[in-house]
Image 1 (cartoon, rainbow, N blue to C red):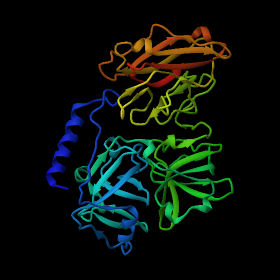
Image 2: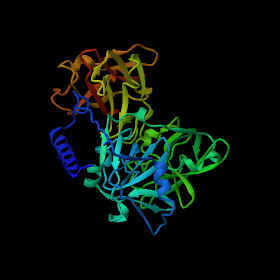
Image 3: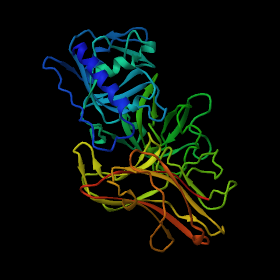
Length: 441
């Protein structure tokens, strides 16, 4: 718990930040580890709630023990702007929020990251009837970011498997212990799906979710979220989010649109095509189909030909860099696996057009100069076989630089087609491939 340790960690973090660009899937930096002091007083979230039992909206409890430490896993960050100046954490005894005076926290502290947080000088305060960890001297009891980074020691790589998610299919069964838990609510629909946007333009907005038994739960959305202007989806699905409570009223907060599964495609009213996930017809701007991957995977699907059991998903949406990303490299074990997997578009209707072009941007690194052989683009007509597109442009692999491509696919007009982005790897070469801004015009 020495001040010198904090300073060293801070300088190390700054040197990593200034020295690297997009090397997150190359040969990794050393895995962060933290050995807690032998005399540390490890507190659980349940302990913290007990210590804060007498806290009110006008009083705080301040930690004074030299060795008080909280060990927890981060479950929610501000990656899309729907969570503001805070993170959510869990341990085996409960969940709580930590107030931090900073935006863009997710760039340093990812969901699934285990941390050891030194508590001396911090406090337990109350807002909206709920306890939170913060700084008694900070603005709105928030911890200054440099102080937080010096106190919060990372242990191991951030992994989804570190997080526990509770499933709920009946809102009436929500319990006191579910405060600020990461939950998945199942078989739900939006009361105003297809009618209202996630948030009004000038203020946070509450929208109602309805479960299969007719119970309602508030979904709380910030007007600063990057999906705020999109229409609430129609259909039935499941939603993962932080189950908070404000002045006794339960409310759910999603971290990104990736937390929504099974609903109909989400529509952006400002999109000329009428929806972010495209469809048939020429549209006012000549766009037949468009998927940016800015906020989600959209209606692309993944077809795995060869997938090692050690990797949950070769392709996944990357919310930070707003793209679809594929890799068969596991940083935690520094292991490369042989794989073959394709991200596939939905059917795109070219029956009513006489000319068409496919546009997309892609990039990759760590393919040992073989990116054009290991990252390929394919097309097929409905009911047909995949045909590889040739003559594509690629980046030089020295850094992640997106390279634009425009391909004439007029020969497929009059048909319905699909486009596929294929990633392959070997046990010695497993780079990272990224794709964004796919359109047919």
